[in-house]
Image 1 (cartoon, rainbow, N blue to C red):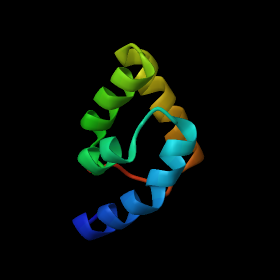
Image 2 (image 1 turned 45 degrees about the vertical axis):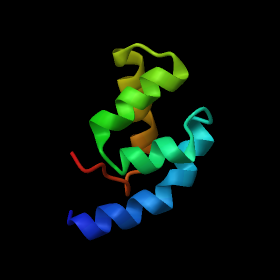
Image 3 (image 1 turned 135 degrees about the vertical axis):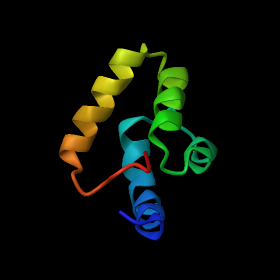
Length: 72
């Protein structure tokens, strides 16, 4: 997936991510900017999750939103 498409998807999915994980701020999501590892770190920090729990939640979320891809 090209960088422009990832950026477009990121803008679209920021709201969906906030619905799932309300403790993430708009600033958090702007800093993360579609990068998976950064997202997992912020998810752990804001939600108080272990790495494995954050990974599991993210995988489950991505199954429900197959159109979204992180910029790995």
